[in-house]
Amino acid sequence: MNYMIIKCGGSVLDALPLSFYENIVDLHKAGNIVPVIVHGGGPIISSFLKKHGVKTTFVQGLRVTTDEVLDVVEMALSGSVNKKIVRKLKHVDGNAYGISGVDGGLLTAAKITGEVDLGFVGKVIHVKRAIIDRIAEQGYIPVLSPLALDTSGQRYNINADMAASAIAQALGAKLCFISDIPGIYTMENGEKKVFRHLSEQKINQLIHEQVIHGGMIPKVQSALKALSDRVPEVAIINGEEKDSIIRYASGKSVGTKITLESEVAHIE
Image 1: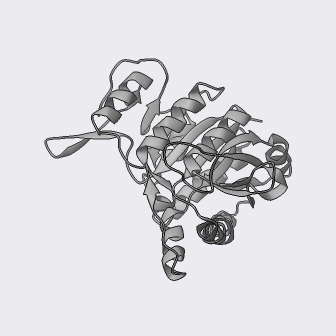
Image 2: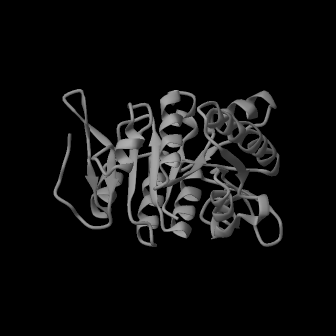
């Protein structure tokens, strides 16, 4: 199957127009591409945490996750956001199947270790592709929330960008990050200038210059890791822009395309 991984950030989900979901359904019905949605839910998680009086912090764009935080994260992602996306796709005559990485052992995780202990924050070490294949074979659009178990059954919160990257690697699929920005950009004379192509070398330079910062860092790092392991193409596009996902799927220049090798500089 020809899969395309569509990662929707929590910050953009509420802003996405209904036409975005219509585009996904149109892609699916056309039969050439099987869209797989991997979603985050940062703002909703933060809202749920506040509602339940649970405090949390971030380190380099990653949420420090205690067991108490994890209970709320699972409730927000798998119980709320995931089903909301399924409902929206159904509303525009689509067939979607929502699950989390926990279900059926879809995603196997290992704890992320480093200078700072992030708690129950993991990285994906295995994707059970057969589950996604089976959902797709039944005519559904898979909608996946980024939670996982390790080999002992411990739950982990997975950064959605990293989860999408791992799933794209397992499926050998193009990876498209949906955002509320036109791509990676710099400001010139008060105007946004979008980088249409970025290489690994240029990305590292922009991180050093703090043009790329915060939550965008794990996004581009996930993109580069994906490219180094079977993922043919990664792009960051604006989901609020009319028909952006259709234009991207048809090969047109949309947002920022990320490659390992240098390309001719192209900024708009």
